[in-house]
Image (cartoon, rainbow, N blue to C red; front, top):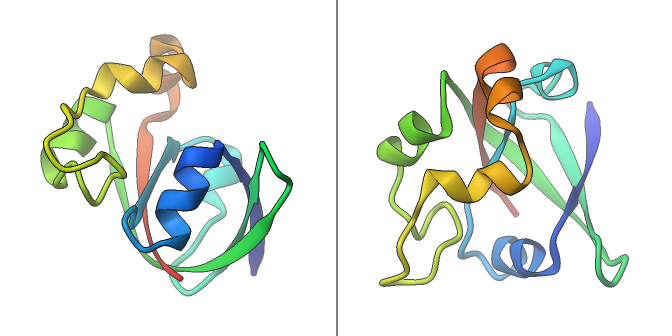
Length: 110
């Protein structure tokens, strides 16, 4: 199955240059449909550029704090030495939604 997701320009570049290997999302109905070996077409919200990645793993967590503890910051898309803070995800997903649905780490390969 092929899924579509939007990304910020910086996240899009990090994925397609091979730095970011885990996409973090709310584990809502749309993301619950994603399965290992599915493909995701990512759209760059800035340029409209599109690229495809293969889902290699899925791991569901109760919170972004748990997800962040399970992966190195670089795999999540942070620059080396940059502080990885799970509160960064609050600008995308309110805490109430995180508690309701949980969150998912989508391990990808381009």
